[in-house]
Length: 341
Image 1 (tube, rainbow, N blue to C red):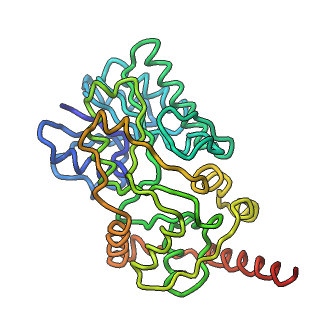
Image 2: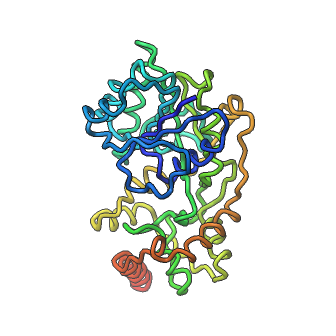
């Protein structure tokens, strides 16, 4: 079988490509601009093109037919409309990566299934994903376009420790604050529930949907089965670092108010996603992909990530003095407010 990945070198897709490259019977192709060609496994074919240049992509595709096309970098309706034009009649399955952040916010219930309503008033990113899903399912209903929707939640790889509140350079500055004994900001009171999924586990579920006729016209969430509070997540990171956690809890509304004006999208990223307690029911996925399971617990995954980050400082240890100073100002302001009352 022949699979095409649009993108194919990101946090999620790299693990899928690696797994599929070792699966017998698959011929794997990537369509991207070649910015991370060093991570592409041997034997994987590459089409160098900007997916936004529809005419150039059409020319490079030639008369190729793909059993599965996987879209990882489609964020708006015009982008999936383009994909529909490019791959209608050229693929047996089009898998679209949506987002679990599309589920109803505020949460109507903390147990999430694929039947949970899609609605997010806080995050344009999520609303765009919902609109993409609606367009694609309309094409499935009207003309049989063979779409499968996949909704990941918080998926991580070896390059970045997953945290809730971080700056524009990622999570390293939070790790640095932990190691220096500084207060580390955690949204809310730290008790909300969250699910973290290592990309190798995600890949198991995703590959099981590829070429699977039971997945056509359906939506699936792919997450791990481990649920933790945010306090437990941060404490697990601190334990792996061998340091004492100096947790500093800050209300999400406050973070959104004082963060968004500095370019930190906490209204979307927290109110529209990470501050909401969620527990994912993956029964639907497991009926279609029976071997789906969580193999990397967070206590294991975080040590793998930290080992990699410590060994690759230039790649992973991106300091963010602006965010560090912002954290200090937030803590100082709240402590001054407490003292003044």
